[in-house]
Image (cartoon, rainbow, N blue to C red):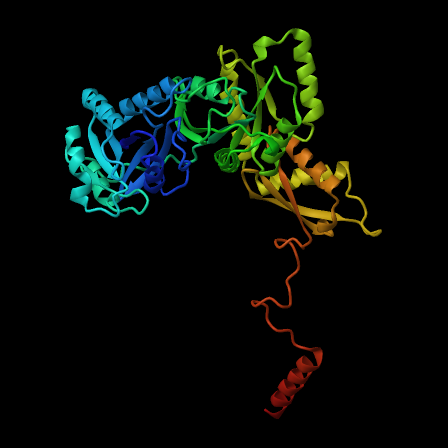
Amino acid sequence: MLPVLALVGRPNVGKSTLFNRLTRSRDALVDDQPGVTRDRLYGRGRVGGKGFLVVDTGGLAGEAGVFGAQVRRQVELAIDEAQAVLFMVDAVQGLLAPDRDIGAQLRNSGAKVFVLVNKSERLEAEVAATEFHELGLGAPLAVSAKTGEGVSELLERVLDDYAAGEDAPPVGMPVFTLAGRPNVGKSTLANQLAGAARMVVSEIPGTTRDSVRMPLRVDGQDFMLIDTAGVRRKSRVDETLEKFSVLKTLQAIGEANVVLLMLDATCEIGAQDATIAGMIEQLGRSMVVVVNKWERLASEQRRKIKHELQRKLPFLPNPEMVFISALRGANLAAVLPAARRAYESAMISIATSNLNRVLAQAVAQTSPPLQNQRAVRLKFAHQAGKNPPVIVVHGNLAEKLPTSYRRYLANYFSRAYRLTGTPLRIIPRSADNPFHGRKSSTSPFAKPAQSGRRVSRLRSKSNYKSQSK
């Protein structure tokens, strides 16, 4: 089992910077503004043949009001999960009262704690660590999350009790990403699926800022769930930090096998919902439409919303639609099965013989339109990719196929193989069938042809020699 390392400390001491260095990623948002991280953020790291999981947390004593208690609760949960707690302090600012309070809390928790004196790249290690002995949590370690100084030595000490070779990642683990406008209930649904309050939840739009990854196991099946920041219209994205959140949402969509597009049933299906759906479709990701807050609508309103979904999102590739109440837990049992069916559609493997049989049926039903009075003959097809499925169709003038006929083929294949929520791609190629075509005279394996005159001359010479004998 992989050891879990939790990063804790007051705001702006460099926890997210160290998280990114340990995971060799940019998954955690880094900003000079305190309080950027609110939720637990999970990542995987590896050093010297040993793997580990690292959890970034919000700054303790950093936020008051609506978020303060929830952030503290997130840190407490991270400490309970961890085999080692990396308590970060700031060498430049020195030992402050919040550091003492956090140190007292960690001493009472009974956790295995390492005190990291960050931002010590310009200081002597012993000088930087001196005053932090007062915390009573063992010898402090001077590090620099920014430059990496002291990080290798830190990991050697932390992972000394753990054996190497325990970090084989799960093969083929599906990745499901929650996406949608702010305040549609993404974090509430994530908490329900996780079976615990892992995400900070608030009625204030924009509560989630990072794309937060959670490895989960439900009904004996493993998957990665990514909660993302809500995507607003560009005209309403003012803060630099929120712009980074939107970018990370798009990256999380690109990383996914299936995107759970969440909509708010109490709001009209708007242009921003269609824009997000279009981005998912353009990135080629499978999709399940999850309509939240369904319990608040009367029968007539429900019929209206279903009609709006068909009218405003007609370009979606036949996604399953699940109507839920994330807050009350209504119909949540339908979400993951729908996501798994969409995942199977995205990762389908189709035999070439079967694919060619379906292609022949599609062409027989509707022939390709003429191109400059010439017939387009589609000869064979094969699968060239997954997530999304990619079908390459070969034939003469195939690259001249209009977009409408390519769409027809994609829809025909999707119906034939019962794909749900997956945008199937058609790539036409104007080329002969390499398996059934004639041998090319330019083939490096072909024998050079001999002209009739040359063959005749050789025969005459052979007859002359036999007569002489």
